[in-house]
Image (cartoon, helix red, strand yellow):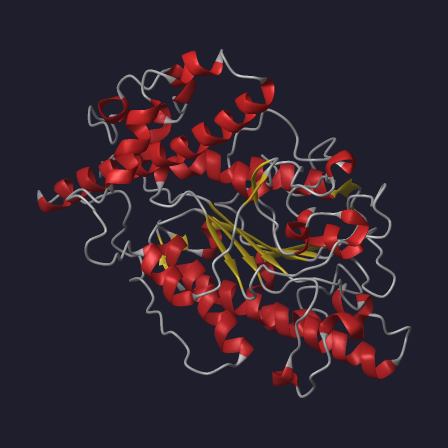
Length: 462
């Protein structure tokens, strides 16, 4: 490894204290621009959600042996990349426990947390940190955005099943046990955020850092640890959450410095490690002008692709729709998704749910097929990603959660053994998420949610 250091984080954060130090500097070697060192793109993690479960005989493959040649109807659009997909039947969801009357408040909120809300604090947010935010805490130091949260619908559904906080209906990302992460629904806002486009007069300095960032750091330097000793346990929690937000600023500063140094190297004629001579150029984003749901979802998928392709973030979550209030007139009917899932075997309703499921998987397929078409390093962008599509219910008619539907696409740089359907996996939602984070190289100090183990069938055998 050369003597070049991509980030001297202490220069910016002098005096901030060991409590805020990130144990990631030793692995900042990915930022060195050495032609002698083999180029290895980073692993990215993407999550895309659809509510209300699936029609099982349209989703699950009939035979592991014929899966690659004859995917089930719902997965037909994944055929071009089916050899880079992994399906597993037998992933059990989180039990509803004391919330039997709240299937839709739980299906999204437990999807990435693999945990139940605190039954003693139903009217406030109290749940585990989600898997995407665990990943963001680890990978966010390398990128301008620690994570990107997208949604098709506003997160404003008003309902209180079992007395649970309304945010559980429309959020799947939780930065901490008490902080839900809002998702962006406006694609133009997302595009501006990816490229740091600001209005004039917003106070940005020449290096891209706002005066607010500096003042936040000034407030923390020197006093946070002493202050904490004087606070009650409740206020200590509040302070800890504030310090978490400062850590986010720290990562942004580190990313800015790394990009500045790589730009200087490029100007000097040295190729930055963030690019490769065979990489595809960044895709073009076109904001749709109509109201077709497919066009809207595809531009959000394009934004996910662009964010990964430019290494603006390595973690993205996209809520394709929330558990209530969505219809699909593009499919030729205006019935709401939720109402049709309570079909009681009625063929017309079953067919509509199957069509809605296929529609949503088609949008996921649009995204991963595009990733497959983009060169990166010695392979493709998809090969360097772990993309997960899924739902928080197995069957929307009965609200069952015994075999949650998941599709994995991409091998995470060779970490996941794809091109298979595993019909009898023994594991739960937390086991799956724990395994995926491990495959992405993210160190864990505890399992995710209800996890008790890693699923040994997922990783590529060493």
